Amino acid sequence: MLNRHGWCVRAGAVYVAGLLVYGGAARVRAGDGPAAGGTYRATTAGVEFTAARYHQHVEVLAHDLLRGRDTGSDGIDIAAGYLAGQFASIGLKPGGPDGTYFQDFTLSLGGKVLDSTTLTITGAEAPALARGQTWTPFGWSSQGSFSGDLVFVGYGVTNPEKNYDDYAGVEVSGKIVFMLRREPASFRAEGAEAPAFSRFSWFASKARLAKEKGAVAMIVTNQATEDADTLPGSAMDGQNYGLPAVQVKREVAEALLKAAGMEPLAEVQRKLDGGLTRSQAMPGVSASGQVAFEGTSARNVLGVLPGTGPNADEYIVIGAHYDHIGDSRGAINNGADDNASGTAGVIEVARAMALTPNRNRSLLFMGFTAEERGLLGSAHFCANPTVPVEKMAAMLNMDMIGRLSDDSANDQNHLYIQGLGTGDIFKDLVARQSKACGFMQFNPDDSARGPSDHASFNNVGVPSLFFFTGLHEDYHAPGDDTPKINVDGGARIARLVYEIGLELANADKRPVFARVDTPADIRRGSVGSRTGTRGPRLGIMPGPDDGKKGYPVARVLAGMPAEKAGMKEGDRILRIGDAEVNGQQDLVRAIEGKRAGDELEVRILRGTEEMTLRIILAPPPAPST
Image (cartoon, rainbow, N blue to C red; front, side, top):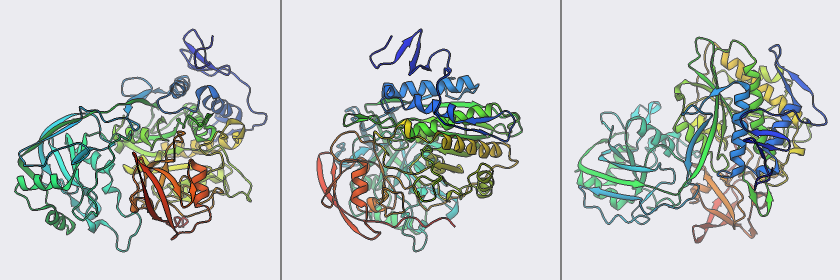
């Protein structure tokens, strides 16, 4: 029988288009493959990659009945069940924290901050603490109650490269850490323009470090030198960095410092920027409160293939996001390329690895949720890993691998491999295996700083590679559907990832992580061309096209033009110059033909207020050398 979603349900199983996608059998029924499709045989005997099997996974995940797999929808739950069923049938062990294939968590996704969200300060004559006026929770704060004495930790940074440690000489376990935003000015390379701030300044880095040190919450304030003492938007953004965290205005910060017998904020910052750490306990000053918000259930899907060698306690992570953007403007966005194509690749690589004997390291296969909402699933995993981060030897990510073109006249859909500079052995390894798999040419990039899930792993120091076949006209649009997928190409890329992953799993030594600060040329979201050519950048990541007025901004990249102009996550772009913007293609057309250095007048909506920003476009990143 058909349920209310049109899915065929019988005996506890769910079928879509004749394929068992969820149920006790946890397998895929035989189905018709594509009209054409070769078999790509790997180096290990008995392991093969077929276009027909790859096509079958894409067909299920991008079926109309899943309605675009939006985070929080019934369709994405079916997709998660299909992926878990595939992992089970392959023989992967459950990788979730509760013995299942799921890592369940809650996202707020712009949900309302509840009235039970409070902050109380004891021991300081602070101004009235009115939420939204003198303080507010961060959108990435975890939920829950907190209380404890305050410890001032400077910028909340430990940077071995600069021999700088704000946590040296202070004990913060069980305490609330109080810190400044950003980082010491001395961290910035001489003459550096972008990124304006290093990875040590990121909230994700600060929160993870504070949590590792045993802190129970974070209180943050703007630097004394910030032009405006603004608070972040009150809507939660779905990220969770593992600690309750709030920001207070400078007037509150001054009261805290005074109560602890410390110098004013400007003097404290001056000394911090001069390389003098000023961390100390704040006797007699404490805080308590609670962060609460409406939430949406979400889940990453995890399967483990244990290693059989001396490094079996180390992991090669192979993943892809399985969510998409759902319905918009009366049409279903099936996301066959974005990212049923990459998810199908993960399944096929997992199947091949399970048939391959004698793997030294273990392999962790993952389907990430809420990538389209700002890498939220992978960010949650990296903040709450099921295996130690230091045991993750490498991460391989597949996102939009379904439009491969071997046509040299088409500069849009070639294979891109990014992150080559993040591991010391990557360049040689990727060059050899790409040639062996028939990819005589690919577009290289040293950076793993791009808007897909590998960036979350790169942020925590895991060498990361990204496989991608570029943008196209159907990006985040109803035209991204199964018939347009190059299933032969997808199977070939899956084989390449298998060969690279297998060599990494069996290598005597794991890759040594290297930091690459240059943003990757992702040619996605803030590029200036629909053809994939290198264009000027705004420095934003798109949110899902939800049918509402304007173009949603999921993330603003640090140090890039949008951030410098004052754009914030959660803003909606209404117009660029005279061009109205109501979606991805409108944004691309508005920037098309512009050059680096051009100034754009951008009208945005922030909450209920409209405002105009002036943004000077940045040049594209330099090609890898």
